[in-house]
Image (cartoon, rainbow, N blue to C red; front, side, top):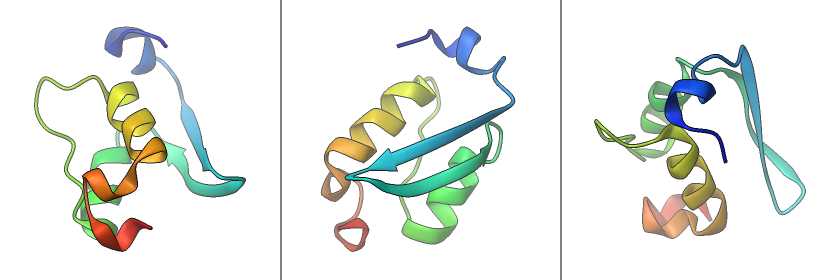
Length: 67
């Protein structure tokens, strides 16, 4: 898993969960997308990679509607 500094150098990211594409888009839009659609909030000082990995492994950790 890359550091948050390295992750922010990526242009786009694709998040797959159980074979389904959950997100495909730009890095700066990750937090807004998950908050606006699912109320899953990327908190300050959190590595976005950790947020996405945790979200893909256990979506109910953030919001029960993600399952």
